[in-house]
Amino acid sequence: MGKSDDEESGSLAGQLKALKLVEPLLGKGYVVYIHNLYTSPDVVVELKLVGTGATGTVRSNRKNFPPNLKMFL
Image 1 (cartoon, rainbow, N blue to C red):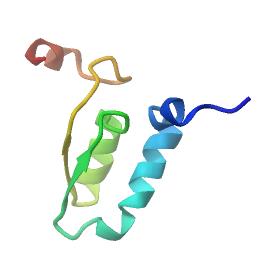
Image 2 (image 1 turned 90 degrees about the horizontal axis):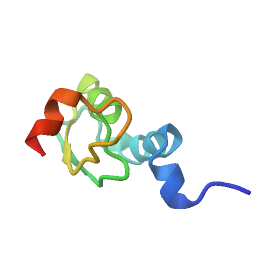
Image 3 (image 1 turned 90 degrees about the vertical axis):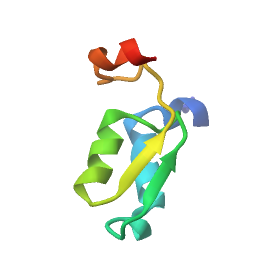
């Protein structure tokens, strides 16, 4: 049995799909607004590396979420 859409969106595969959707906008000065199912430090860093800003809600229990930022939530 496969993963549900919600389970996949929080995974690396789901995050890569989200990046693929915005591929035509990368490096053109846009800021991408990301839903919390797709937001992760890894995605934000990848977007920054290609010259695209990112903002959105985030889940503090997301893998690689910086522990020092949890105090601001």
